[in-house]
Image 1 (spheres, rainbow, N blue to C red):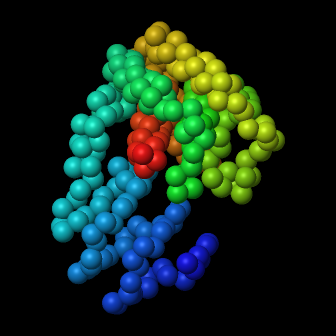
Image 2: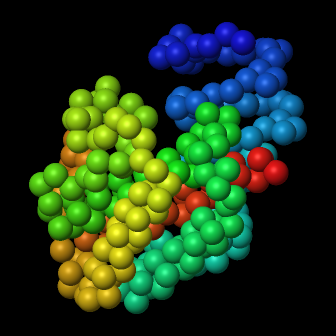
Amino acid sequence: MTTYAGTKEFEGATFVRASFKGAVLRFSDVSGVTMRSVEVDGLDIDSHDLFFGSLFVNGVDVVPLVDAELNRQFPGRELQKAQTPEGLREGWVAVQSAWRTTVEGTPPDLVDVHVEDEWSLAQTLRHLILATDAWLRGGILRVQQPFHEIGQIFTGAEEMGFDMSVFRVDPPTWEEILTVRAERQALVTDFLATATEELLAEEREDPWGGGDWRPSVGDCIRVILEEEWAHLRYIRRDLARTR
C-alpha cells in the first residue's frame, strides 16, 4: 500500500470514479470534504474533534446524534460539560468507575497489546497521567515542571519543540503505571472535593501555550474529563478487537 505523508497535493482535488476501498487516513485534514453518490458501507470515522464541528450525512448533521449515543453507552459522560462543582465531582466519580471496570477486567497479557498501531492500555493510562499533569498540576496549580517522567506525550510533540528530556526512555512496569495513575486520580479527587464556583471561574494560562485561549479552572477540569472519556472509548474499542 502506498503511503502519502505530509502532502498537500490532494487539497481541492476532485476524484471521479476513484476507489479508496480499504484506505487508511491518520492525523489527516479532511475538513470540508464533499462526497456525493459514494459507497460508504463499512466506512469507519473516528475523530476526537468531531464534537467541535459538524458532519453531514444525507443532509443531516449527525454530530448531536453521535454525542447522544455515546452518552447512552457511557453513563455520566454528559457531565464532562458540567458547569458546577457538584456536576464535575459527579462526572469524575462516573468516569473513574468506568475506568476501574476496564482496568480490572483486562487480562495482564493484553495491557501492552497494540491494535492497528493505537496506544496500548498501558500507554493510554500513561497519557492520562500526562493530561492530569498538564491541566491540573500545570494549568490550575501552576507547577513549573508538572510532568511525571512516565507520562505518554502526544504524537508530534517533539516536532513542535516540546522538551522530551523530561520523560524517561525505558518503559515503566505495569505496577508503576498503576501507582502513578492512582496518585494522579487522587489529586483530581482531592482538588474537586473543595472546589467552589468562584475557584472554577478563575482564569488560567493554557498549559500548552501557543494561543490566545485563557481557560478557566473549570475549563481545565472539563478537558481532563474529556480526555478520560475519549481515551476510555478508544481503549474499549481496541480491546474489543482482541477478542
